Image (cartoon, rainbow, N blue to C red; front, side, top):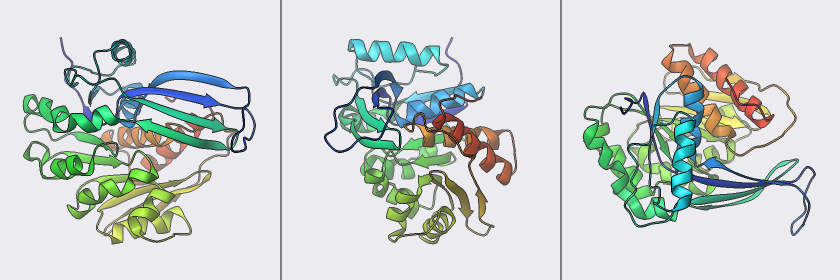
Length: 292
């Protein structure tokens, strides 16, 4: 029997190929390290983290009927993610992400999410079977700007609690239609916030406030090992400093941040406690631990 989801995660579901070197790398370096193939994509990463918090997340995405797609779905099911609402018959291959990390963090990455982009509105077809959805919906910036704009106007999601995250700084501008619609809670790093704000900001708090000034109702901004912040219209700005950790990985930290924050809010924790939980969960992820 299909489980009824608590949260919908709309966006990328793909394989992450992550190469990590234990020391700093220079451009063109060829060094020993470890390479992992793990389930990834912003939407799936958030869903997996939500499942660890005891929620029932479903992913709306495009996954091919190739061996990579079958293996990815099997892994997602094992990790507690509902996969009944995927677009499988697009004739497109399963997407993939490649990242290179060193001891200082991410060196470079390439996201091949062309199948998700080409599938377009087909990934939203399952919303017809979920009428009147009022729960949380995580939106991933791997979606095209046109599709994000359509989602902002979609009557099937008119009452949904939108949680919006860009996939990377290069895709932050895709979120403009949602800011213009004054919908959603945005989860950004400082560079992404600066892109949306249109100016440099000295810290997470000023960056979050700048995006709110652009029209967003609520914005959370992380800044690596520096304090994270939450700003909202007509409310105080909060900050929380992450604990110092040894960096073991960086890919997926923002997705863990979002999932922990959303899980805290769904149990009615106050703003400061929810921000603290998110910051601490993200730091734990960076240190190599999965929480809870």
